Image 1 (tube, one colour):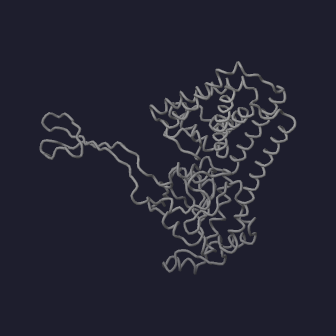
Image 2: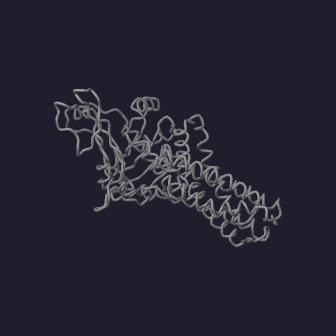
Image 3: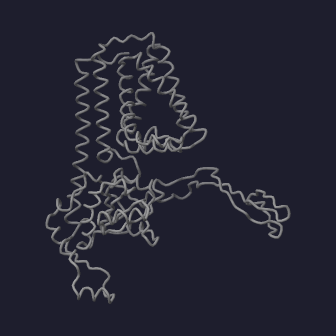
Length: 450
């Protein structure tokens, strides 16, 4: 029986460590999911808890998984495990029945499960959890309490700091479809022969004679327009078909034109500054982006775009308050949040391929890249002389572009160095945390116990 308990601890522990880790690298994603939960259950007043829960729940899951495997404080751990799993099994059953949120987010973006799949996963896990819970009285905590609790608290602090670091920067591991190296157009394609969504359409007609409404299918709706009047139609998804990883990438200019095709076909570089909500964006980062937007005047192989899901009124208000000259494209809020977990964030695209992504804390000022460009931009900002205004008014030119800077030769390497530096920081943090854990365990704590 003890080997069954050991295997139960090992299996449940691995699941919890995986679940906690994939959420710890993307705490904002977890925060968005908690916000969906609170909205679905009419608990919007708890929205301020979403980010703390995104950070600390992932740390809790990782630590609980580790102590299950190590066998620390077994009686307490099994009781906490039982309470945790009971609550979430009940919650996922409610979600499966009513489907207020389509994806529970239990494995972040690393593994997407439907609500029913999540519920059945929890049911299977509960079998092993019950084995551990009902055998807890026969367990003995052989380790020294002070040492083991020290390890538990230390692990929780380290895991929380790791999650917080990923919040301050971009996720160390990106499981979303807009990862660096992604060819966006390929991720938007629908392969031949795959099953598509199937819908059932109901047509609603009203009898001109009796005034009563009746429902019909597409096959048996009344053709006699003298006797029946069409009122409405309803479509219901019957069977979910294939959905490409990127299916909602659209960026509209003020005239309603989608610029995605233009961006993806550009053989030069396109820098996208993305802010899903301008009122919550870092204002200094929005101001700093002004010089990057003006760089396209001097570079023939560089374009700058800003995108937001904010209303036109908010865009005009904030642009006026911060004296921003660059225009904003409109995009779906969820799509923009998916592209980059920062407000604002930056994405560099060339030939339709994502070659760099940065949070605003990691994106350099233009003067840090090349201080001489500020003078060029300053000169370009000087009001046009009379001759230039005449050329513009006559329609001989729409805008002035000097093509003095080759973006391809100067900037990509420098910008990508910022990405490499951030990833090195993340790897260093993981290495240090792992080393500290080994030092805590090696020679001080009893080895893994069955």
